[in-house]
Amino acid sequence: MPLDLEPDDTELNMTPMIDIVFQLIIFFLLSLKFKTVDRRIESALPDNTGIEARQTLLDEPLKLKVKVFRRGLESVDKGDDHTLIKVDNDAREFHLPKGWRGRHVESIARIREYDAVVAALKVLVDRKLKEHGGDPSKVNGEIVAPPPKGGAVPHGDVMSVLNVFLELDVTNVTFQGAPGPLPRRLH
Image 1 (spheres, helix red, strand yellow):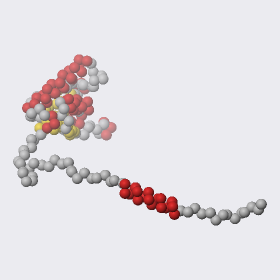
Image 2 (image 1 turned 120 degrees about the vertical axis):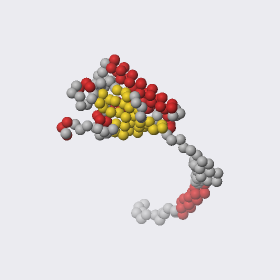
Image 3 (image 1 turned 90 degrees about the horizontal axis):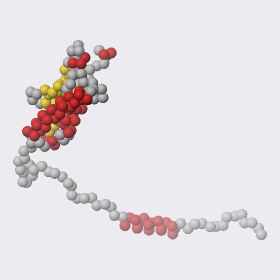
């Protein structure tokens, strides 16, 4: 039996496969449904324009400014420095304890003294909110540490003032600060 080394004339007929591929393409194109675009746009148009224009008065938001300063820095006695807090144009001033070094270092009595001053500040800010209607969403809080003494206010004291705003649900609070003091080696 002789071995036939020549390949047979066998070819794969591609025509039926191409027909099936085109039929599948046509099937998917015809059965494909694109998501329809919603023709309604949600919007809140102003009442003071258009066919039935109405005069609307916008409530001016209350701007509640709290200023924080550092006092006693020029004193020879190192325990004389403290943070002074003023609310708007109110004559009352809040003096945080002198020589405050932070909650982790101070005694319980000094922490209570600090917390009492912050609680009195909260009462005054709450009273000012109620005078304006009591809606904290219509209040713009502002914490200002003006130069030159504002730059030396400890971060914890500023955060205590911010916590007063947040505890009263005033979330729109901005901060304007003075640059911090330069380290001694840069003077």
